[in-house]
Structure formats: structure tokens, C-alpha cells
Amino acid sequence: MSIYEHFRKEERSFVDKVLEWQLDVKNRYAPKLTDFLDPRERLILSQVIGNDPEVQLEFRGGTDGAERMRALLAPPYFEIKEEDFELALLSVNYPSKFVTLTHRNVLGSLMSIGLKRAKFGDIVLAKEEVQMVVAREIVDYVRLNLTSIGKATVSLDEIPFSKAIKAEKDWTEETGTVSSMRLDTVLAEIYNLSRSKASTYIQGEMAKVNWKIASQPSFEIEEQDILSLRGYGRSKIISIEGKTKKEKWRIIFGRQK
Image 1 (cartoon, one colour):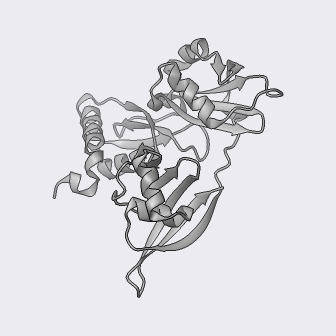
Image 2: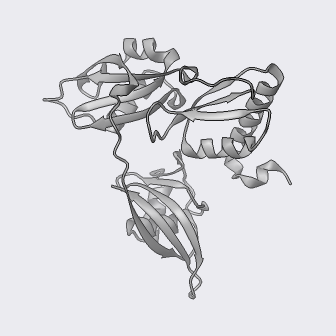
Image 3: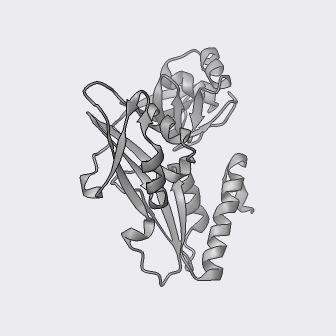
């Protein structure tokens, strides 16, 4: 059985990348540090590496419960330390009394200075504080080039992770039934929409599955997928419980508060 059969077609290029990392560690007898990975990518990485006795695997995102993390693949004799993950925490100074920043503001500003999404981790906002985790190799670049977010002039300070603020990631758990695991059907159930409206949103590239735009209403959803719909928030498929007597799928899903 091919390893690709365990993953979606669009995930095969990432599986190839993981196989390259695995082989590289074995051939060079040296560690391999990745960029930031989302939870789905980490799951794929863990499944591909499996219990390979020649490669140890650990993840760090800088804070407890981090969503995006860097992975370190290393030979079995290598002693993995926190500093090996090359993480830095930046705090944003801005006129909080006059300006309100959103996650979208910060993300957009980071992308606008030429950064790839894989080079920075979680962006956390709490009350008037804004922090971001970035790869240490880009700290100087970010501090030099990120001088505004939205309409606010900003400056950045590197601070210790002991001062990291905690992200609020509470989920409300609900149960529903769907006629199929198509993306349009699942989104319609979760967000209380008509299937046609959900389909229109999807075709308008307003929906994401595992942080990637999904533009096909027929896209098949699986357990543990993270979904988002612009303007409606984020959700996740906790489990697929099987079929009811009416041949519908019973799902347990979470919605972020």
C-alpha cells in the first residue's frame, strides 16, 4: 500500500517534503528544523515519521497550546533543547487608547512586508496587548520593516516567553446530522445556513479547510478537520459518530467562541 493512500491528493506534495526531511536526517546524521506548521501538517508529519527508530520528532510553538509550531527532526542520539527551535516572541507597541488592532490587521501587515506565513507562528491578542511568535532568523527583518499595522504606527520589542499572554481558544461542542460529509453540507449544518448559500460562499473562496482555501462544495470533510468561513468564525470536526436510522451522518463539532 502506498503511503499516499492515507492522505488527500492535495497533501501529497507535503508528504514528499516530509520524506525528504526524514531521509536528510538519516543521511546527514544531523537535525532538521522546519518552518511553522499548522496542526494538520503536524499530524501528517507525525504519521509519516511514525515510530522510525532513526528519527526523533518534537514540536514547539513557544507557548502552551500553540496552534502553529516548528518541528525538529533529529537522530536518536541528539539531545533536543528548547533553544534548538529558534523561536522569538515579539510584543507590539502601539497607541492602544486610540486604535484597536485585529488578528487580520496583524496578519495582513506581516504578509505585506514579504513574509511567508510559515515564518511566523501564533498571533495573540488580549485586551490591549498584541504578541507574535516568529522564527528567530527573521527577528531583525520584522523589527526593521513592520512599522505600521492598519493605521497605527508600531514598534516591536523582543520579550521572554515567560511574558507570553495566553490565547483564548474556548470551543463550544455541539452535535448535528448531515446527509453527507461534503463541505457545503457540513458548513450549512454548523453555521445554520442553506446549502446553496454555503456553496456560494465556498465558490467565492470564503471557506478554508485546515487553513487552506477550499473552493469546491463537494470537498470531503474528515475527522479533526479545522474549518473556517469568513464572517462566521472557526469550527472543527471532533468526531464522526456513524449513521442514524435515516442514513444521515451524526457529527460532533466544536465552534470557537
